[in-house]
Image (cartoon, rainbow, N blue to C red):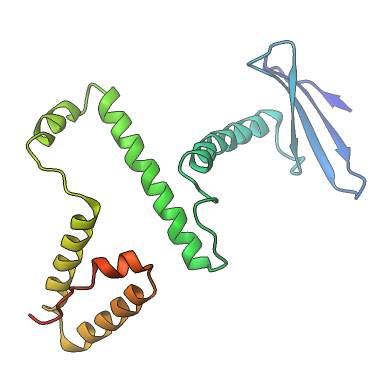
Length: 183
């Protein structure tokens, strides 16, 4: 049975059963990019209304539009390969942090309500720091603050940091070769 709803971009819907016996609702929707064609949206929840299926698909599409540049430009899924769940979560977090920073920069450049211009004026006064110096400075600051903690916590953190540094590539180990744990 084909059901037609009143929404002008929804042509109708049809409930069918797959070869394996799963009921599926197909919603026929006008393709906004090419008016002479229609899109077919499938839902395994046949109790949903046609408009609800279209709404959910619209939300899903915005997520897909987010993942596409994340995969293509920010190297989600290709820059790093691991079977360790924690490592995959960490990598995904780093990629999404890149995306957030890029979106923040885009907004500051395009949005009249932000202080992007004021920020850029003051950036000229700040000397750029290369990545090596920045990482060494960050680690020195981290070590300085570790030394203010209790001895038990400090020894555990020192051990974990030493293990992490030892597991890194040679060029990263070289960056942190001069770490001094003494106060």
